[in-house]
Length: 169
Picture 1 (cartoon, rainbow, N blue to C red):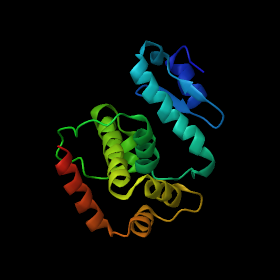
Picture 2: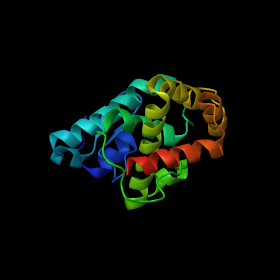
Picture 3: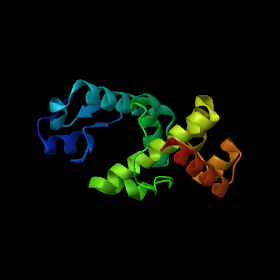
Picture 4: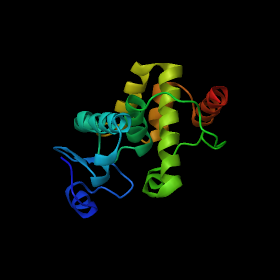
């Protein structure tokens, strides 16, 4: 469904002005600006939202956004070289996804790069297991899910991720 105004997008999907689309329980809703997107960008947005729609039955409402958004981007965005910010190797918090402008983009990029790290280093089946462990109904806290699934404590995991990121630049 495509909306005609930002207010309609907000009312139907809880969408924010920064978003091109949002997923509800029963549909994907596009913001008015999505009509002006090129085919490549629209394909990325649609894949991202389709991931959210398809994973909705196994995703808890309180799942960590660093994984729900990072994995959605992992399946939708093309592989590109690492961007310039040196502080990319920091897991974003749910609060980081409430930001606007460049801070919001950075939260999405950090989540995406973390999902790329897990998928590359541990494999896509492990990334799937991590998503289910950390985002499923009754999930443990994120640190526990990461340590259990990836067999690395928090500091070792972040160090490995940062080393991997440095090699991507």
